[in-house]
Image 1 (cartoon, rainbow, N blue to C red):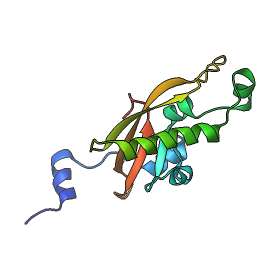
Image 2 (cartoon, rainbow, N blue to C red; image 1 turned 120 degrees about the horizontal axis):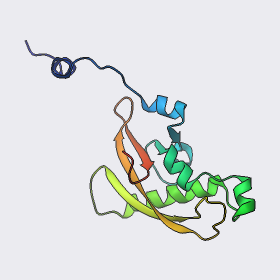
Image 3 (tube, helix red, strand yellow; image 1 turned 90 degrees about the vertical axis):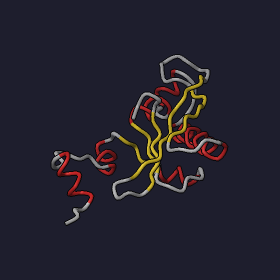
Image 4 (tube, one colour; image 1 turned 90 degrees about the horizontal axis):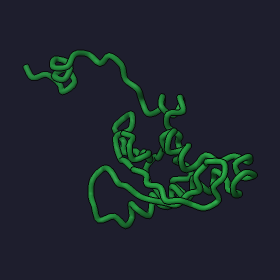
Length: 141
């Protein structure tokens, strides 16, 4: 008798001990769902940023604007998504990962000039196998 793929995997590796869904990651703040603005930037699939990528490239408060230069999170998020969308449209590579760069003012309490930063975009399966996009720092998986 032929066993299902799931049963065969459980025969080899044993039962799943724990799983962590994308929905749970969004609820916990590990991922920040940016699908609404991503659609405006041309994305066809749901998109999220990791918390670390959000803190590095998007997070900005009124206090940051008073200390450094006036910006807002919406504009900073748009920059990330626009450059990711541009990278997708112009790449000649195929695959599920893409590095792209953008300029952003670092959130350091004193900088007023933008600096280049590289991010990584990955396409992978969502909780039910649908394609989803995750934007992260280059050292994240």
